[in-house]
Amino acid sequence: MRNSVKRYPKKRLGQNFLVDDSVVEDIIRTANLDENETILEIGPGKGILTYALAKRVKRVIALELDMDLCGFLNDHLASFSNVEIIHADALTFDYRGLKDRFRVIANLPYYISVPIIVKLLENKKIIPEMLLMLQKEVANRITSKPGIKDYGSLSIFVQYFSNVETVINVTKDSFRPIPKVASAVVRITPLARPLVEVVNEDLFFRVVKYAFALRRKTLRNSLKALNIPPDRLKDAFRIADVDPLRRGETLSLQEFANLSNSLGTDQK
Image 1: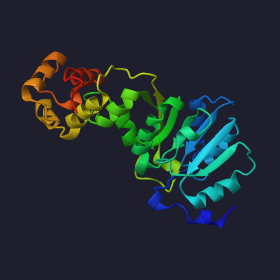
Image 2: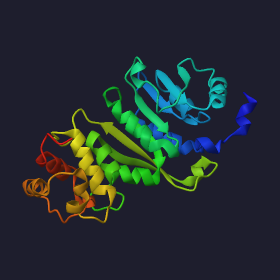
Image 3: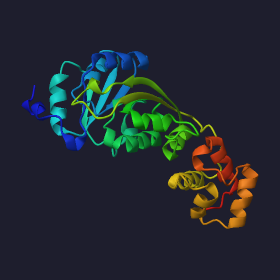
Image 4: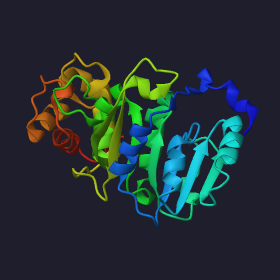
């Protein structure tokens, strides 16, 4: 075992290592693993979850940004021929380069959890499911519904592409060092097709972005940023049956789809 592991954790990499075996057991039970499947893990830390996965599935691929930890993990998991430790950045890794379809099970580094979720959803055709440990606040945001304070553009983005639910709540003392926030494991199941029909996806997400940019503004005011003629915007509200005096946080996924579709397909 390499001495370099004694230097952990590294604050610049947001390292808080999972140390609670009961949480690992909860994740394994929730995952309902198949012995013939491939699991991709992001940020394996000291390998507590990697070890449990390796005993149960055909192949485990673990992406680790920290070269020192890669060395430690290769030593620590040397008895497993089905584990591959890859020194890589999860934000730039070529997921399509992997030969197998795979599920993702990971304790994500909290400071980059949102961009990693976006990256994984961009590769949703090869990822049937994700079980992700997240900061509780982020878990609340991606699972939130209209009218809840955590509901926002991230909620819309994730729920447009997937079904998402919180499956495990995790206390702070399950990690070392103990973080300042609680955590949760969410299950994200990418959809073959979005739940709502959108004519112009780029316009749809622009409408969502501006609707939440200034949360206290009404839609009539916040969507002025789209630079659409006022009469046309007024007609779009009428066609979509959306009150322009409402705020973005009150609109459902379907209502956002209706509104963007009512604006037409030629908006840039």
